[in-house]
Image (cartoon, rainbow, N blue to C red):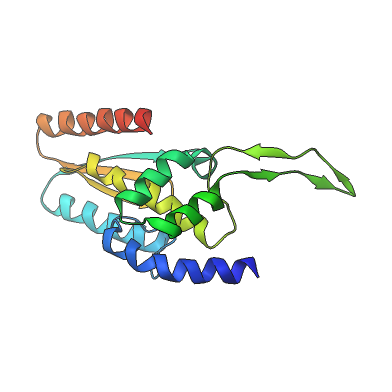
Length: 181
């Protein structure tokens, strides 16, 4: 029954996500995948090569990103995209005061409170994760990015040494963003 309720809520929230969704995100998005991510990137690389430019690329992977999301910051981001009232309170309740234990061969550990992260294996986990990372794209206004869940590919055609400095500036801005988050 909880999964059916989650699905009903998700169906109400999903149209909101579509209005703010970063088109660069290929994770947890209908009709997108690691393959579409790779094809889009290869297209950009070939275009740069055809013009005689190099393509500098940086890959990042936010290790355990699903587990580390701040509930408070996620709620703020949900408010910013237009969720409010009972729906926002329900999502806040859904995230907070969760606990977990490990059970093996009839033995169970003590329960521990989960203070961060989004529930994995749920209908809402991927949606909430995408909302959380969606604003990362603001850091990269003049370079190209592609996401697959928590994997980020930052790339830029290099036509002169200034382009290398710009790419480094984007990485510096990403570091500042990650410290704030």
